[in-house]
Length: 89
Image 1 (tube, rainbow, N blue to C red):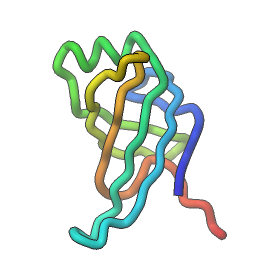
Image 2 (tube, helix red, strand yellow):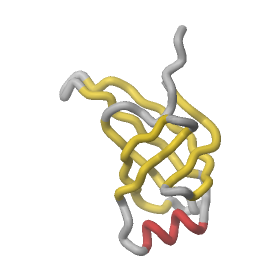
Image 3 (cartoon, helix red, strand yellow):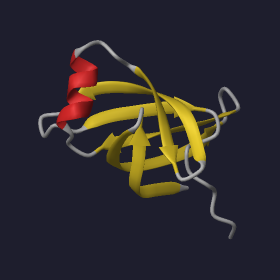
Image 4 (cartoon, rainbow, N blue to C red):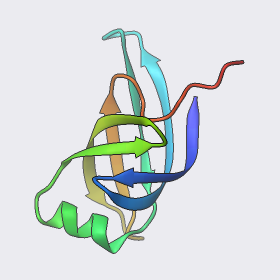
């Protein structure tokens, strides 16, 4: 289960690369990935802001920002339902 495309992060337009999986140890769904380089997101991280809402279409989920990578991307993680719709296969 994954998503690659446009999203909103606290109303900021961003591009994300996300995936997720069920974690058998705690029985919950864990998702995360990378936000493509964005000066606005880097400013959020450097200002101490870590808790965010990731919105993809009508879906949204609470997430947590990680560190800024050398290329200006930022890691984002979450637990629970992901911010993208599951594909029915």
